[in-house]
Length: 441
Image (cartoon, rainbow, N blue to C red; front, top):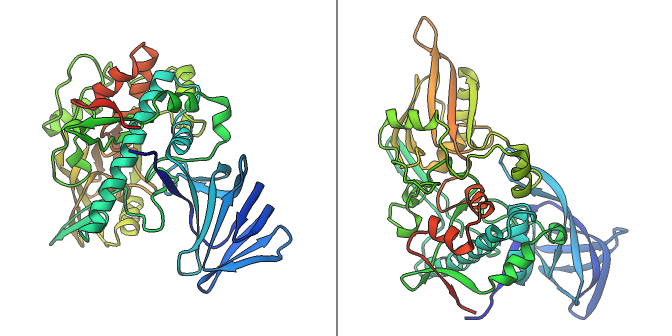
């Protein structure tokens, strides 16, 4: 196996892209450097210099980097549709391609070797000051997920299958989202795939060292590279794959306790309530601000209620959110009832009852989308309703646990394990049961 080259979508479907080339870039015999703007016109890309003068016009513009050259893009949106969404200026190494994306939009794609890409992913997902054994574990998991996803994407294309799936039957909508649903590039640069925010954070961290130390190492189970999913904080118990994606058992993506001692999985609504309202002694339950600052990226540190959290809505506010997110007019909201949960307490099927419509929704991410202007931190939640004399709810309060889908490696839990002295192999074998570490190149 050889190291692949990865095509990463940095700016997807932007009306205009602005930036600068920090060094020499070449395309079709032309050498370019300095500031630029790019925008679509019809079916072509128009590239202009810093003064607005047209340099190139073509259906596709591919810029190849000279040694040591980098490029900077302005106003890159990160955390798309999540509560930390914002824009940043980011600098990248490697090649740059502009493609038209239809409807007057443009896409910028960064091409670079896998290991170089991973160094940025690890430093973007977590702080470069995190324990090095955790950063090594993250590098192996990220590398494994990416190559497994590319292999799965290739198989799906060959079989004529599309990304994700929506199952709609009467009043039930079950929807999940796969990571391989990009058609112009391999992966996007945001949380939908893996965070990839350029080379700026690499200078101050250990991510590059962790990637070099694990170069070409993958998680392997039954001879195949593992689809090594990960999330920010499981809340004390990781989740089964089928709670979030298609109905199948993935042995190494089954629930585990985020602790040495086993914890009983959630099976009933009473158990879910006890679990979500508790604060168990598990790896990802830490409130040490110095440790969290060492583990998390700067904007992730803005979220301090990742382990247990609470959200409240007036009934009319939640009715408006549900209509905007689902496209369904529920009328007066009467009840929100969990029908099925995974072992971590994450809801996989939820019934929403209103005066005009009753709908069952799933899976985990779709539930999080419907119940928030952005996304809820997780679907491990219990819902209480304060009702007036008429019995109609006046306010709904959601009490939740964890941050993310909960499947696979718990980033905060794994970082705490490393801080406690666990090695990379121990961390990965804890979260991905039955998987082995194998060097493939």
